[in-house]
Amino acid sequence: MVGNLSSSSGVRGFRCSAGNTAQKTSFPAQPAVKTSFNEKDRSICATYSPQPWDFDHTGGIPIWKLLHYTSLLWMDIHRHWFTPPEGGPPFTDLFFGRCMFLDFSRSYHHQVFPGCSLPHTLRICKIGKTFVFLEQKVLETTGKDPIAGGYMQCISASSKTRRPEPWAAWLTQRYPDLCAAPPRSCRNRAAVRAPRG
Image (cartoon, rainbow, N blue to C red; front, side):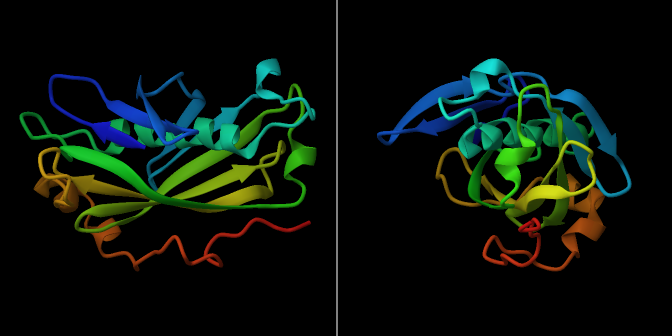
């Protein structure tokens, strides 16, 4: 996931597909459903309601399709918490998703069926000099138990050099607690784990 930001244009990105090709697209592809924000823990919650065309020939929903819908919450997060102050620069020139880890429970396919609504959340848990870590959770239909959990890491980069560069100064000044949070890693598989039942 790559996005190019400017003060006068919308967010643009690339979605990778089979054959190492890329398709240019605008984000979000569709608005989040029943989106709500939690200011205390800087998280966003929405619901994913599968459509008939989301199901494949086996009667289930491929994991990649669920990831496509849930990852769009990042676009809502940066508009809500990373909006620059009046007259300030965008929080970054270019951003891209570096890694994503999500651990699914064995009950995932039993929890996804026509007519269901799956709550999913995305929380900012760490802001580094050139990266941000986001915690993801997908809950079963009652909203109590997770059926998937993990992390996503996004990187700030220069659109000219494609090298990492620091976020805008106002971002770290606005969220000193997130900058001081313990380091995270997509390799830390035990950090967020969905139950195996």
